[in-house]
Image (cartoon, rainbow, N blue to C red; front, top):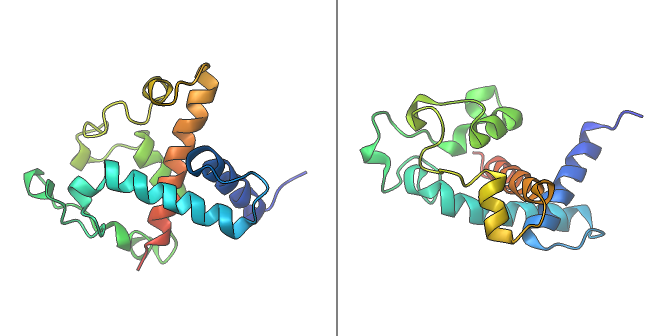
Length: 150
């Protein structure tokens, strides 16, 4: 059975919200989405605001130290013909798609998006459990970025 994009989205939001924000698994979709976005905002402020700014417009306190201008993350959809590039955002966050601004891998983030780091933070007993937390962290961040598009 093939799931619809809306069904897949709801499932991913539920996982991210449950893992990161402590939302109950049976909560209504709107509550789960709000929890995932809230968790993503916390993640953004921890990992991204230094360069991209608290309002994500590219004016963070570290932006002047970069060799290129820091992109306005509130305009990602605008730069992609009006559609938020969700999969591309995931690939950039987790380091699969490198950006010259980040020098290849995300050096500012270090191991933040690895299951090794997450196991230490969460006390996860298994690599799979830690990997789920990492994926939840990344997905929540992408949902937050999607929510702040202008």
